[in-house]
Length: 97
Image 1 (cartoon, one colour):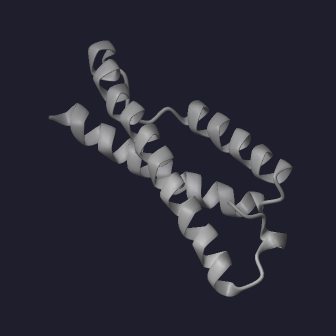
Image 2 (cartoon, rainbow, N blue to C red; image 1 turned 135 degrees about the horizontal axis):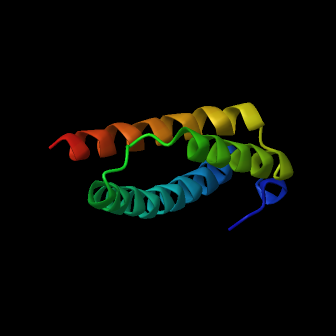
């Protein structure tokens, strides 16, 4: 692992980006396993797939973390809105089955 400042070529930067992408997929897959479990719990409780207050809570937390890390909060929010949207759609489909 090299810091961005330690990368002296575009290939080194690409290697680090690829490493991070691989780790992100692993983390997103782990997150997804909890989304998958959530619909089962919601079904048992006859709960809705979409929980607006929780979505807002997650978005607020992600925006704050992004800002702390020097990442554009708007970009983080856009990414998480997609992730949350996919989760809601997935759970909603499962709950209707």
